[in-house]
Length: 69
Picture 1: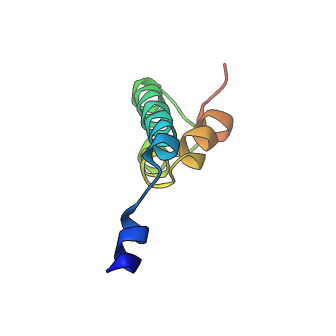
Picture 2: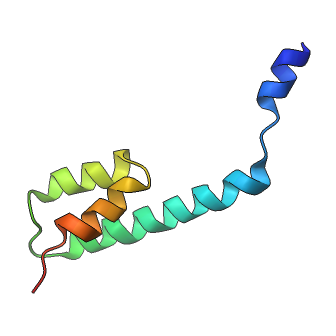
């Protein structure tokens, strides 16, 4: 039973800021992607990348997917 207890003990004070940062970054990237008239590639693909590829997805959208004027 002690083995299970050590697996469940998660340092939330270290993990919570990363999760919050990821959710905020994802929301900003999705909002920008949906509002953009054009992107480099299909919008549906960038939305899927933003949602399913955690922190790297939104950063990749801003670096590669966002169309520059």
